[in-house]
Image (cartoon, rainbow, N blue to C red; front, side):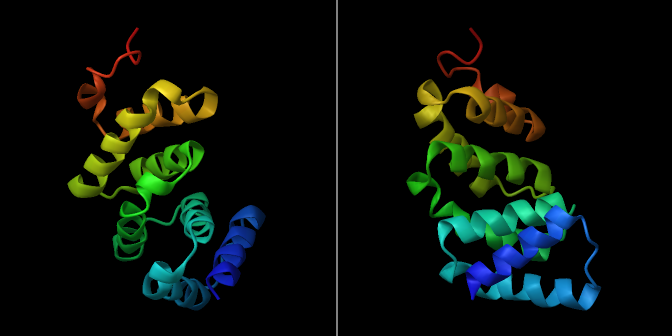
Amino acid sequence: QPQDVSMLLWSLSRLQWHAHPELMSRLTQHAVMECPKYSDSALLVTSLSLARMNFTQPPVLAPLFRNLYGRLGFLKDNQLALVFVLFSGSGLRDQAILGRMLFETQKRLQHLQGRDFTNVVMACFRSSTPSLMKDVEGLYD
């Protein structure tokens, strides 16, 4: 089940335990193959867990973020900010995903507060995209 895989990955990341490569391979293979069936929260937990474990394999991360692409407009502000931070630190360079995150962020920027706002700004700088946000009212004031 997607939730079981995401929670197992979360537990491994919280324990800071280095899982056997075969176990990680099976868990990440499940995530890649089944991510369209994952709930938003299971997909976010999976992505966060892999980031916490410094997992940087594009063949695994790319499908997760591509699956999130279609969901960005439906995520809560804090979830969108988290996805943007995770993507910006993933090492992936997918202009379509980045463009969609920037679009969604620009729509919501005036309402973002606290950690969500900070995460979005950090993600922009880590993605080398701060110039794309220069015209967003309130960002540079």
